[in-house]
Image (cartoon, rainbow, N blue to C red; front, side, top):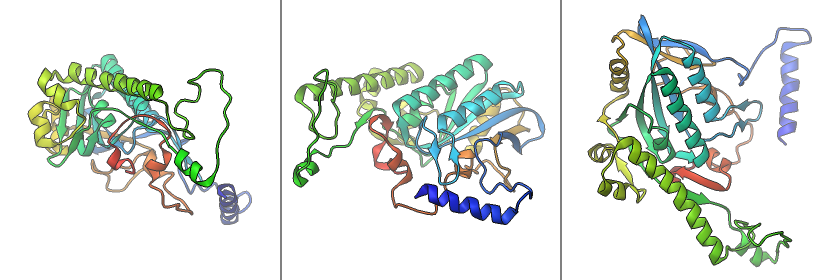
Length: 327
């Protein structure tokens, strides 16, 4: 059906521009280069603002007419541009995310930490509505974390999700026959319940990934043992309690985070605050969350009624606060 829709739209576009007419691009895509835009400031030195919004993922998304890069690809592309600009002395990550896949979160943690080491730039995080689980994970390399007064953060742990349809299959009289070379070859199959031995293996894998997360929190935030035990329950915190236990450094607004980034990097109050975008926006400012990800892929002629992010989650291990996984 999607192919048919694309063909219809292609025909409409041909009719609109005519044969040999000028090229008209209705939908920007990943081929559009990132360009620098100044949000404020006139003096030398730059603070780069990078929005981090939605599910943390390293999987590109296919829209009806165009595809869009994954969050990991988009953020790394911006870090690469910043690395080649000696005027960029600080990066502000404006985070509004419930987290995402374990691997994507770890990739961004690694890339942000490596960027910081190579450039000696300061990293500041501004937490907005949500900065839970994997979103907190990618905040760990920051020199300073500012939580909005209403931020929800925490949920430091891992969850293993996979579908289970064996009960439904029993009701409708279906079964799947499997030949396997080893007894664990089909562990995690949605078509049967896991054995007791398999459950123990899943628990072990989940525990190990959770321990990795906690080790990084202990290393980067220097929490005492009692505090770390509380954090290990994977509960969520509002900003004030997160500040009290040391998960964040300050409660404030986005403007406060920008000021902190300027002061930590030794920049003047009138230095430039910049963004990288593929599309120019009139009256642009620091509250604009639009990136390549928002500019494309959201358009759809058919809405299946499924939460976009939830529908894209495949079986696997996630640093994710599950109640908002349909974010």
